[in-house]
Length: 61
Image (cartoon, rainbow, N blue to C red; front, side, top):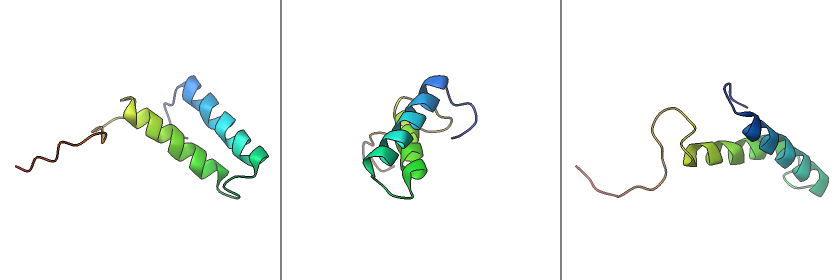
């Protein structure tokens, strides 16, 4: 997980990874998928630096 992540997101990551291992989902990729999910949640809630990539208007300049 990236530096500066909140304890809440760290818990979510750990719980997702454990859940995927128990269910046998994403074999060998549990860490990657859990990190992608948590990073997406962080990006959508504005917790990351830089531009938020959420919804785009589609207007060209």
